[in-house]
Length: 280
Image (tube, rainbow, N blue to C red; front, side, top):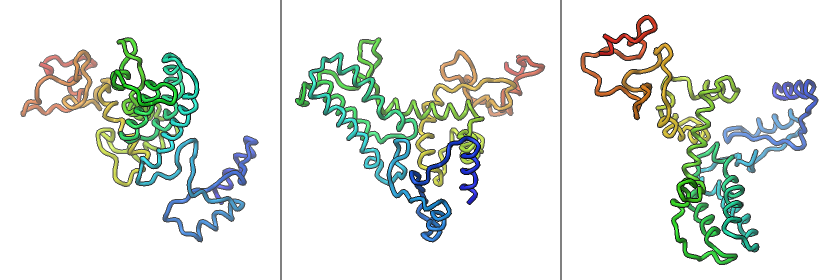
């Protein structure tokens, strides 16, 4: 009833009224049938959604991820099947692959980590289309897909490595949560999964949602290029964090001496300047 009240207030304020005939509900497995019926009656007899997609993504993620995202292969294959009837030059194929085929899974890869086998199979189908001639797919692949996926400026064609691109998109999502903490999604995820210090280095708990576990898989790639800005130095760890500009790994040289009790960078600063005696 509270959800219904909120939607009615929103409709009165924005003049965007919810159409319950076109809406559906999605329950967790533990919801009792009696509760489902009561909620449905309270919301004008709204239907229950058992499966389907929302914004192009599957509503329910089962154990077999290949089966869930298998429709990607079918979608890409059907698109290529229509192009095979046309006489396309290699340049024409390159434009279609980059502008359409490589862009189709982008939204899904921003939220989920696709299985390696699925990425390889999609790449293999695109490679067969690239080297094929019309309906004849069994042509010799003169250059491996890995080499074709390298940067175009270095003599290659610059096709996307789907697995690497997938990780880059997930890392970008984490970076967005860190740099824009005032977004609603950032505040919700921070309250649920990012409360502890060092959450980025820790693995998500077993009870975390499958979506968050997938997004968190981009942490390794993000941390490779993540440096901490010193500021007052209170949150920067001398020996663990990357904070020294000009060094490849960004960390302090050598091992921490056994008698050293220094932990954070603010202990190396005095009066807004580096304490050179302490540094030495």
